[in-house]
Length: 256
Length: 63
Image 1 (tube, one colour):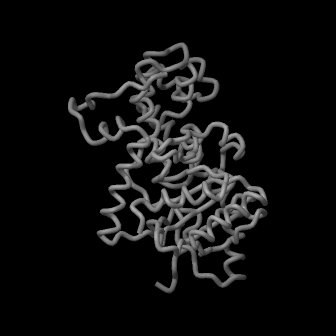
Image 2 (image 1 turned 90 degrees about the vertical axis):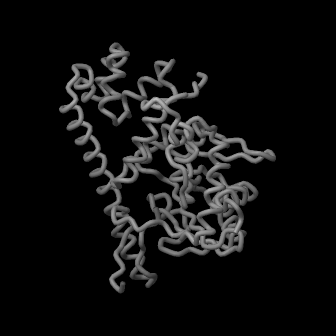
Image 3 (image 1 turned 90 degrees about the horizontal axis):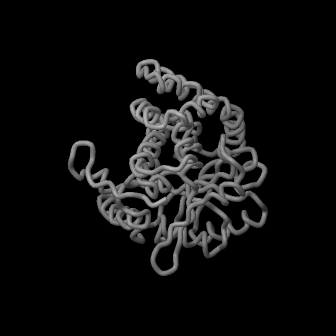
């Protein structure tokens, strides 16, 4: 196997001109919130042309579809993910998951505008989802995603707290999940904290400060998002069940 | 806005998390590549961890 099979997938996607952005575990590595991940997840542009490019890339990697649904526009447009396992020698058994619509996130075109490009050696570069979009994409029903979201936020604040822009501060006030950090920020930037109250009323507890109440409110906020994610996936899960029975494929066991 | 390197963690010494944060994204990719070698050498699985919270998780009744 190649030293880093993810890089092989990325270079294959580039060679085949697949419009895609790295998301998930690999994106978290790039932003410093993780050290290692087996995930190979992408958000892709959902057009016939791009799906053809993707299929060519998958053919090069000898990637086989392992679960429903098939790689078709209508499924991707609804929000389904497609799951593959590579069989080419260099990337044997590596999983690739693709999706074109992330709950709560912008269109691919907007994600693409805000992407981060990481240059590597030999003129190779990686296109990864922007940090703010990655944070938004982590608001799911899974514990591990909220853990990672918190790490992404905490890291960004640690790295940039000495001279943040107004826009940066507003984003922190909107997304930070740590009560202590929110209180510290509200003390340091009370004016911006008050401005952000409209969008996030729990900031009032950071301004006072009332850490107990703030923690409860942060918890409620998270639970609300988890519930939205459960409701979002409910009809998609029903459809997956129907497709599974029709195709008689084996039961699915967590793509990511 | 230029990112400042953090020199000490809250505990007052350079811990692994701080070292990791101080790397550039490209450096992190290089470091994770080294981890891949170990992972594969130790026979690590490429299957994702079973995650009952995933909307796709279906318990395999046959197991």
